[in-house]
Length: 419
Image (cartoon, one colour):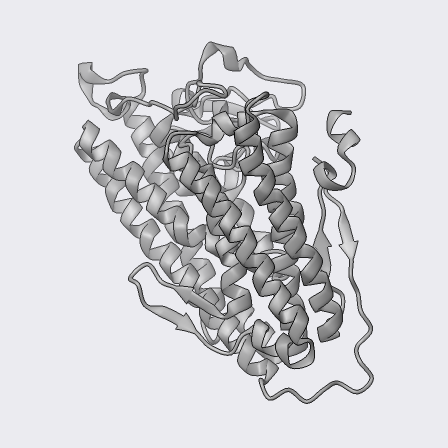
C-alpha cells in the first residue's frame, strides 16, 4: 500500500531553554538501549542458528520445536529494535534484509496448489529455488546448485527487482520452520513436518538436503546481518557517532522513529490494513501465528525509548536520562500525557496478546464478523494513533526540526486500499 509522509517540521526556538537534563545524556541513553537491543537480537539469533544446525543434523519433532522456540525468542528483542528505524537511515536502509514482509514464499520452497503460480507482477512467485538448482534471471542463467548466504543475499533477495521476493531474514526462516499457514481465519499456524529435513526414504516433499542448506544459509545470513547492525551502534559505529555528533538531530531521530512506528507502520500497515481486508496474509508473523507478540513488542520498543529503559533478555536493565525527562522540563503536561498514552497502548496490546494466548488466534481476530477480535485490534490501533498525536505535541514542545512521521493509506486514505 502507498505510504505517505506527514511533515511536522518545527522552527527551532529562538532562545532554547536550558535543560537540567542534557540532550547529550538523553542521546547517550538512546544509543545504550540500541546497543543492548541489537546485542540481544544477535545473541538470540545465534541461539537460533545453533538450533537450526541441530534440526538439520538430527531431524525430529523435538529439534523442530526447539528451532521454532528459538525463532520465537529471537523475535522479542528484534521487534523492540524497530523503533530505531525511520529516523536512522543506517537502520532503515538495512532493515529489508532481515524483516521484510509479506513474502511470496513460493520463491523459496513448495507451496499448496491453491497458492497459484507466476504472476504478471512476479514471474518468480513460484520458482521454488529449493527444487530448482538452475534458473534464468534477467536473461542470465543462475547456478543455484550450492545454496549459500551469498546466493540468498545477492541473487534471490528481491529477485528481478520485486519486493515480494523476500529470500532472507526472519520471515524466510519462519516459513522454512512452519510452512504455509493454510487455516485462513481459523485457528492454527503452519504445520511443516520435521521430515522435510529428513534424509533418504524418510524425506517428505523432496529436496530435504537443499531445504536444510537453505535454512542454514538463511540463518547464518541473519546472524551476519545482525553483527553488522550491532557494529553500527558501538561507540565508534556510524549510527552512534552520527547521533552523538548532533544531539538535536538525534532527538529528531527519536521522535521520528517513535511516531512513524506508532502510526504509519504499526497502526496502519500492520494492523488497520489487515483488519480492513480481513486478510490473514497481512499478518506480520503469518506462518507462526506470532503476530500478536510482534505488535506487542513493537509497542514496547516505543515505550523503551521514551522512558529511557530497556530490560535485556537476561533480566538486566539498561537505563538513563530519558526523552520523558527532557520533555518534562519544558512541557510537563505533555510529558505526562505521552507516558499515559503509551501506557494505554501497552494495556490494549497486552489485552490482545492475552486473548491470543488464551485461544483466540490473531487469524481469528481478523475474521469478518468477529466483533470481539476486531475490538482487540481496534483498541491497539486507536491507542497507537492517540499516542502519535501526543508525540506531535512533544515535537512542538521540544522545538525539534524536520520530524517526518510516516503515514499509511489505511489510515489517511482508506478508499485507496480498495482501488
